[in-house]
Amino acid sequence: MNAVLRNEHRLMPMTVADLNAVVAIEAAAYDFPWTRGNFIDSLAAGYLARVLRDASGHVAGYFVAMKGVDEMHLLNLTVAPVEQGRGHARRMLDELVMLCESTHARQLWLEVRESNERARRLYLRYGFRYIGVRRGYYPALHGRREDASVMSLGIAGDDGDVD
Image 1 (cartoon, rainbow, N blue to C red):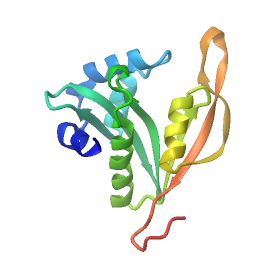
Image 2 (cartoon, one colour):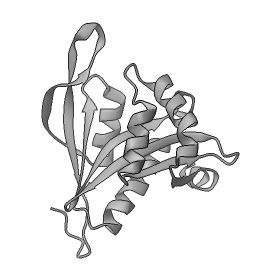
Image 3 (spheres, helix red, strand yellow):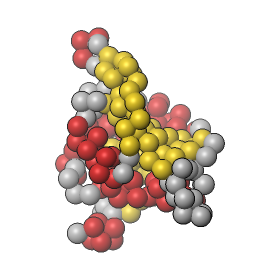
Image 4 (cartoon, rainbow, N blue to C red):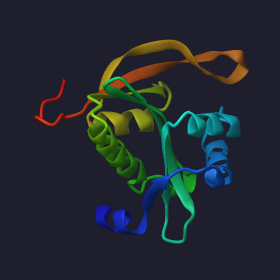
């Protein structure tokens, strides 16, 4: 099935023209979504941003990542709720790892809500390691804050080594 997904869904650079679809998915997926301004700022800053389009051109998901010195930080990876469970997140992670390799990033970092068990399981299955916790990192309901799990994935370098 993964081969079918790769042929029918294509990752393309995110543009401002994609933001209506991206913001709609973001609002459907999260209680505390990124704003259009967050995405515009990310594009203006030159962050790596990709949309996953189906054969008809509809956006099924997207990611935004920030390049650092020898590392990449995944800021947002989202699959439209109606598209979840079809391997799209893994496909986008595959693309991001390839981008890490091409930019010589040796580590891929992310934060994920501790309550987001589905995403945490995906990242662990993908090979990420639990590094620690950021206390009160995310907004939560009733004015509370939620902790974030910090995770990291080593990226093989040109010599095949992973830090």
